[in-house]
Amino acid sequence: MDKLFKALADGTRRELLDLLFVNNGQSLGELCKQMTMSRQAVTKHLLLLEEANLVTVVWQGREKLHYLNPVPIGEIYQRWIGKFERHRIEALNTLKQALEEDSNHE
Image: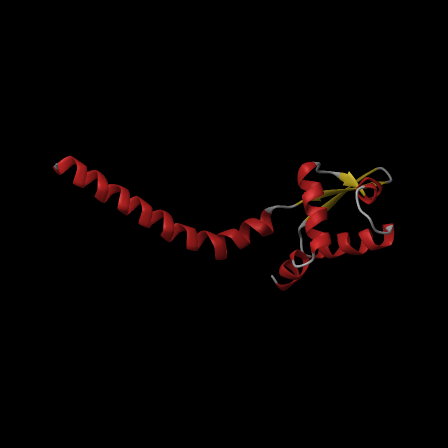
């Protein structure tokens, strides 16, 4: 989990994830064209994303294609974000039911 948060903490790596979200399965060359940094720098960022399991690679012949893996982000959502939203949704649902009951009694 620490590798995941470290990977997401960097704006450049989040930008790479955004690029893969828009167009999944890009080669290093395709990603480099959209970034304002050296090929070596993009490679280092992609390796960190791979180590955090946010990016997976598939070899097509001699070409290495990078794909976004949304599962770790979904795990973050379920563990930390989802549980906070659940209470808010339940509170709104309870309020809705109470208001509907009040309007039915009038």
